[in-house]
Length: 399
Ligand code: NIG
Ligand code: FE
Image (cartoon, rainbow, N blue to C red):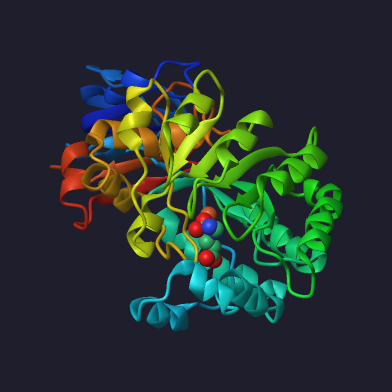
């Protein structure tokens, strides 16, 4: 049993059984001042104010805050090498689509990954996993999608599995064979190849994703792939990054757990999401890095929808996995309140990868996956003074 005492503010308390926050609920963050929190067997056993319970070990928070660790429901952190060469192309004015059309982009990463051994891929990816955990991420989703042939896609999924088995953070795995057309395939042959990969991928992955967007996979391709994956893998879709793609609607049709990106949306997408269990997820890091519009976060919330934010950490459109920066971008660029942005990077992003029964809030029985802050911080300051170090300790799997 471990006790955290002298907590200035315990923030992000959510009643048991609440798995996501929608609409107005996103504006509220429940807190307890001058609190303590008790951890037993890696879970939140109890919390409160006043007289502290006895424990074998105590951490003195010295007035710092305790918040749930960040949950990052959309990443591509298993990749080989770097795409810093393309960064110069981008600076010189080429768009994401133009870089991809010249054989750069995702295919460049696929070539690098093909040449990299599985051990080395694991080693390089773990550097990023550690970086994310140091910045307070306690649960993350990781996608394949730089293999683009059966052997290399499975190589990626095995590396994700190995990460899952090694790190204390929760890891969810997504099969994104349909990320780009693999080299040497025609469009149709590759869609069929992805369909053929599904049974083997389902041995490793929790979810399936399709990059349903202009120049990549069509609504029809997506529909075929998700139909083939029915009963095997729950969808999470890349939609509406480069164009209003129809990806939201086809995702909803197939019961997607989340539809992600949404830089470009019309009211039709908002309508399509109403009354569904699908979590709209926006990735402000991609808007920032690629100069795309920011998603209409406030309109989604005003329509009563939930909203998650994630990093999209990847070498092409968002080379950053800092969820605190994502939260700040939510506030600065999408005009979310710090409370809305906080809910979007904790409980709702946990929901978007199916782990919100265990992560994303201060709730008795949930995993004690927490951030202990230095004294003097609050949620507003965290987003406002967005680069100053605020973490004293990330607590995961404490006994
Ligand atoms: O989410 N949009 C598609 N996939 C990634 C980018 C992948 C890459 O460029 O390597 C994304 O932005
Ligand atoms: Fe992505």
